Image (cartoon, rainbow, N blue to C red; front, side, top):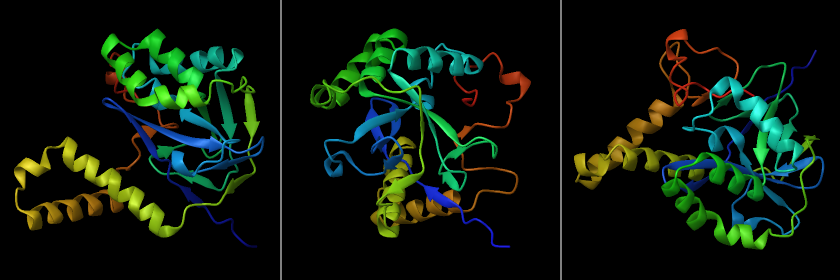
Length: 230
């Protein structure tokens, strides 16, 4: 009996201040595409990961699904159901449920103005204003889309380039450039982070969002660090 081969999906990020919001494009009612904004066709709808939008807000993690559903009723959010063979880099989902909440650009702005402080709202305006203007006529989202395929999956070299951008962002955020003024040393630091991402220590995961394992009870009072649930 043949085994089903898993498909790894790397979602790109859109920077907004300190937030790094993952996104994809909805291509019709049953397909999605991973690409940058310059490569997307006009008919494709950009959608933004709800877990990233709600990160570091006052909404407790256990209330995220209820809030996602509230925005979905207004056509601002949707639950995307993916084939079981898809595995999302940095996201750990229950094997019985391959679904994630995503928001339209209109939903992203609604979340920002309801949940973010003024500085974060300004970052959103600066980062997404042109996209919002270009998508002003987008209609409301369905509550759920059952996706069956990925269009034009990125080639290996594109995934490597995406991974390198993520790694360089880690280096910058950790002020590696100041600690390693020499280019050779900086390159060695980059390689070290690559190895860390590729081979996590035993018992640890590279996933920055854990969708299936309950958090330790001691973190219950710290919603910003509590892993999102769907």
